Image (spheres, rainbow, N blue to C red):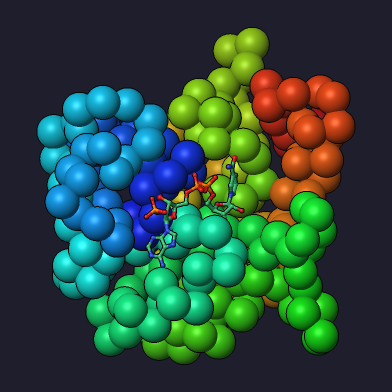
Length: 211
Ligand SMILES: NC(=O)c1ccc[n+]([C@@H]2O[C@H](COP(=O)([O-])OP(=O)(O)OC[C@H]3O[C@@H](n4cnc5c(N)ncnc54)[C@H](OP(=O)(O)O)[C@@H]3O)[C@@H](O)[C@H]2O)c1
């Protein structure tokens, strides 16, 4: 798959590097591409199949665009991508964090993902990768068993593509339903954050067990 990763910090850097290592073509869209691999967190050299370009160059012709910027940068980042997002699968990995690690759910209590969809109405938005820490994206396996990654969206084809990308990292990929379920996924992210920063540390993850 041709994947554009917008925001090459802890989350974007980790996800993009791992997909490139698994043979995907990954373009990191960063604000200052002249920094090269230095702009991409998670290592020194870039894996083969990865490149560093502007966000617009990364998104042009991509099958999947992954949004991994801070929440307050989302409107600008989407505006810059403009028509490059038309029809594309847009993975929203962000969490709409407000001051003091609160969830900024907006006046209508909608999710960040629904607001991303409103800002990019022609994209096919899928929420994923927001409910666990970036170190679990580097290694989602605990005690030999995968941990869970939920995804939510309204377009079945887009969700199938995201499911493949989730599973490629070693997560147990679980369809959480339509995009509106992002409301629950963003609250689940807050639970992970409050547990991790409340004393348990980053080496914790959720698992879904089935009888
Ligand atoms: N950290 C986690 O464990 C975790 C887990 C799940 C979800 N999330 C969510 O994922 C998102 C990213 O978190 P993070 O921890 O990866 O943050 P981070 O390490 O601070 O990285 C953010 C990246 O976004 C880039 N950026 C900022 N504004 C941009 C713009 N307008 N256009 C393009 N790139 C832009 C920054 O680039 P510069 O270097 O140019 O500033 C930086 O590389 C957040 O919404 C967060 O809530 C985080």
